[in-house]
Image 1 (cartoon, helix red, strand yellow):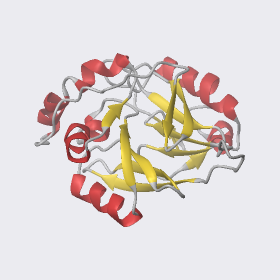
Image 2 (cartoon, helix red, strand yellow; image 1 turned 180 degrees about the horizontal axis):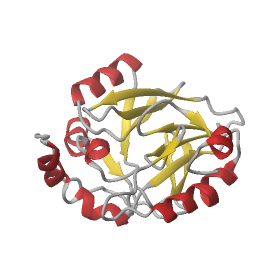
Image 3 (cartoon, rainbow, N blue to C red; image 1 turned 90 degrees about the horizontal axis):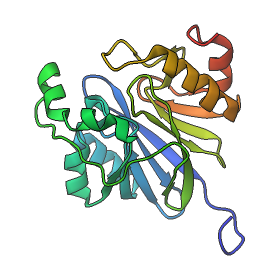
Image 4 (cartoon, rainbow, N blue to C red; image 1 turned 90 degrees about the vertical axis):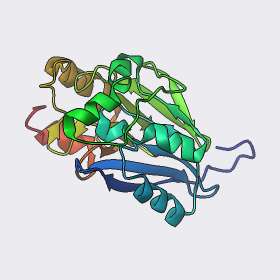
Length: 219
């Protein structure tokens, strides 16, 4: 509810696949105010800016779920273009964001820049987008500092590469931790409710209920 007693207008979301990794950069915004955020701008900034223009929205911040290049590679330049701050992920991913350019070299990707967020998130923090509150869940395993953004009122989450429809994030990196990832999903995300819808970092959106019951990595 707003101060006037009226219910807040709904948040809307649009997925913009970017980079050769087909990463789901997501725009989220308040339907009434047209103010929103860019989540995980991995690259292809012209495509992202076109999506912002088509939606007719004003971006107030950039949110990062974790520090991999396909999610954060375009964040620093987009920050400069839009004049906004970068918020997230958890500081355990600082070593990844400090080496975005080196990640680019590994994958033959040029034009990316290292990222220094304006704000780090800890487990239990909250962040607002156009006055809407998202709860922060630190869910390590795919990367040490992965976070999930949960909008309790509308029952949806932005999960990055923590969880996919029918799969989970990779944990075969030197800093990956399969057991930690499974534990985070089962103890932090699934208790939020089977009805919670999620937008993930790659592939189609899903819902916690079907993943809890049928995801081969989680049953």
